[in-house]
Image 1 (spheres, rainbow, N blue to C red):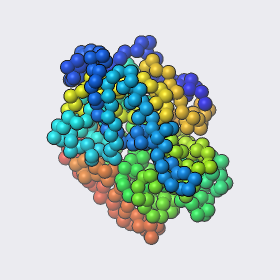
Image 2: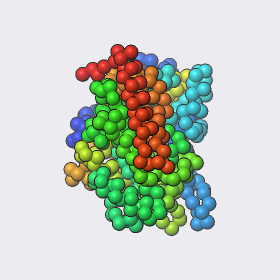
Image 3: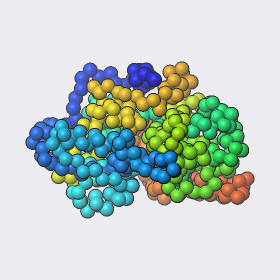
Image 4: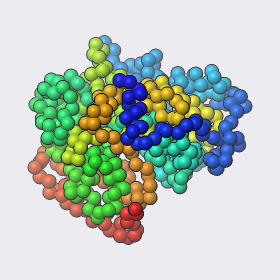
Length: 473
């Protein structure tokens, strides 16, 4: 696959990346960026000897991908896959700024530090903050307009509040699609992921008949259900369906995009398409696809290299592929989104050095490609990972259309506020409560599910009215 080909496609779709000059993001010389539009770039030579502490949830890029040796034992492939470790070493050689890398599992490990304004974190990558937390815990990175100057319209989908971007995302990706084991679907009689929902369901039945789990979910946690939010865009052919919940008082009914999508997921559960026993952790869920015990996952491109790295010795990692979801009735789509959050802690004492490190990442197309993304900064020639080849070809042929991830505008924030007041926002409860209401021992009994739909619709309507929030054109 050629990088120019994909770049041309996304350019035509989103009408971006057409600016003539490269403008570097700027940083405050005094270690703050409270006025992102009126600051200057720090001199790297003045920061030599500084140590910055970087905390990342992408442990595979620090410790190496988990792989299996010929005896089935798990090991970390540091030499070939610890991309962030080697990038940090190169950064130190070039700037004299030391980088201490730390791996965290999720936001909960950092939140207590930020809540007491601890200055021990300089840079972090954990992406699942609320917008209020981004603003409270992160140093302003640039204005949205400055971000658009450098990253095109993708910048509007980065974490931003009141026109300020708090976490820069230097990559872009085709996101939320089907990550699958080619050998498994071929054994079921399929050479590719079917283009229609009906045929997709038939494929899952054939996979299940072979004694293999069709879809690996990892339901022990709620966050894997977040993919429903993007898949709802595919169901409607409209990436803005989350915010457009405000247009209805019944967003969880199956006549609405969100409700219809959750119902599809839950029907897959009723059909036995997900794992019969809950996986203990996400690594085990990925192993199930790598080893052919499950056929696929419904996730973004970031998971592809991780599963490829887990393919057992003697197997070609290229059996793990990435394709668009089927057509749910409105057409076949894939989401194009900014990728890889990098933020500067608001309480850091090394903000200038932290910013230099993030900009070093943004300028390294190879590191971004190795991470499963496409470099997106103006002036940086992108390297397109092979994992996008199937989607790229389908987009080029017109068989799949690109949806650009929408910005967090006033409508999306209002919808989030309604869901929060209704007790449905935190931990993706608006999906989880419905998905879990179906008893798999009684797959034909949807009474509890339908009751939960009514409960959630009533709660949404109540708090929407109490808050006085409506869709704003």
